[in-house]
Image (cartoon, rainbow, N blue to C red; front, top):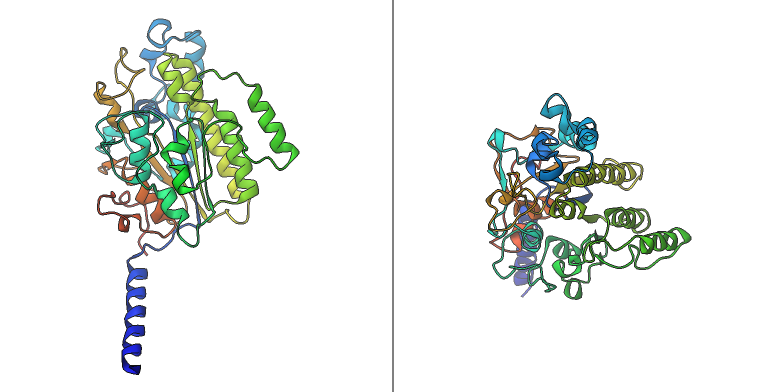
Length: 366
């Protein structure tokens, strides 16, 4: 009997060591994830597009003013003007996927090319034909956020804020018990005068789209959560870019991209000022789908708009080599989930054989 006990104990430790050996080494203690809904790769990599700065084509109220604000002599200058933090910090210190001109196109795999299927794909690590609408249906899939929240070192340390009311459904809040703020007050449990003032301010902003609120209160809520609750994983879903695209307001679409870049910088700068996060935090920025590539369909996406399958993803943080815009590195949106987990030393691909692997070259080999 004693020998059997020793054998069992030895087998347990052998399996434990083996499992630990298969687990990716953590390159960051925390990870911040921000998505910009429906942002085209054309603007991200090339800056404002001259042919869309037009009253009829782009619904632009002041074309000359918009050209002066965003158009530049070349695409490199134009994209830095549109998203300065992204191109001066993320792209220089991290990696960017999705530049089709460098044989590094990133694609959606769900075949539908609109929001709920896209968010499910990026967070669950695979497409699911059951997710075929933007209806308020609880996601049957376990997302990487829910999976991480069940891991011992992450329990109660995962939070999500979104500008779209479907976020709690995408994360299946009833099952996952994740705090997913997607509608209503940006601070669900106000504990200070600052929290209450933020909620009052958000309530005073007109509900322009109904299902989507403006991004400023969403990011403000996420920032207060970071300050107060110290989550190890924080997801922020921004949505104005998609809404202004649908409205055929290219001027406001560009402005929303510019402000989203400011929001990401603000979140990152805050993290770097906090001892628990400085030098220990990774940043992931991505979109859920693309848009049309022509003057007629740039406002739209979905299965009838083939260009909408093109997306982009970016990663920055400790342990990620500063390779900049990747060349000959095709990617899929489904790879975001495993990448997010791998950054903090967890292997989401063990959850299901269908989960896509992490983005290539993002995790530095020890």
